[in-house]
Length: 412
Image (cartoon, rainbow, N blue to C red):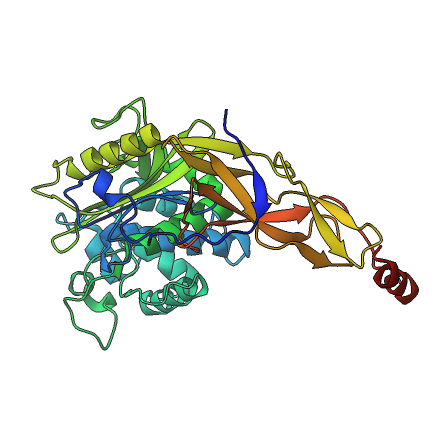
């Protein structure tokens, strides 16, 4: 049984998440990371802040902005897009991952979205950018803005599909070298994956598909997902329930893969960058992802909490000047905390002891912090100690001056 003990906030020095537990598993990749998809708790990290080429993992940002535009009613699934000459040229280049698009034909946003995620179709991704922003360069600027909104400030983004700038012809981003490529760190890619899954979880209904047909005026292109870890594909492992997200490959990037999998009620996001890439059939990125996730699942146990659930131990905090002098606390959202199987007890503390009234029900009034033994559990947002929102499970108003004076006078 896991013991959860609430104590007053204690300060314990935590190791950096940049290479968190990297010594426990040697992976022949440039960078790797596993986090909880909700809290961002870091379960493994290797060079997670090192900017590297991301290739077609770029398309997750393109997909996010497409889904955002649909939610904002700027476009819809049935919106038809006619590719321009440059998109058609890219879409029919046999050296790129693609679904062929024809000049003069129109394609629905849904078709293009599916082709982007499943077949990693570069032309389809460029069509989505055209539908959302009107041009490739305008969409790139929108991508950059969105990343900064997520506090990803050092990303280098030039193309909407992940191809090097020189490979998209007249659609190349102006004013920069032709050989530049999109770059982000493993941490940055994990943040992109977090936002996509938290805001648009329906994306998994597409990323989990091993095959799908792309129909263009009667011509059928059979699409096969580049994520070979899906059921029915060569690198599937039934013990690791992968259902997304996106591969990426260029000469500079090597083989990359951002994946997601469920395990015992929890969900993780994994990132592998710079794996070996001998040719299009090289499974190295999936072999390393499998090793990484098996290591994590063997060394952590997920503790799952529902929204509003109270932790055993201290479930109250002081409401200063409140009509109720104490309020009940619980988790703000459904939460998974990964307990390291290190033989040590997991404990939790509250960041603060009191909050001033008035307080509304559901208001975030505190933060839980977790430790295994003396070591705080890190997250992407807080490498020195993960913080999880605690909400007030009840409301309380503020007492008037006379009551406050009485309490001060008599210690009530």
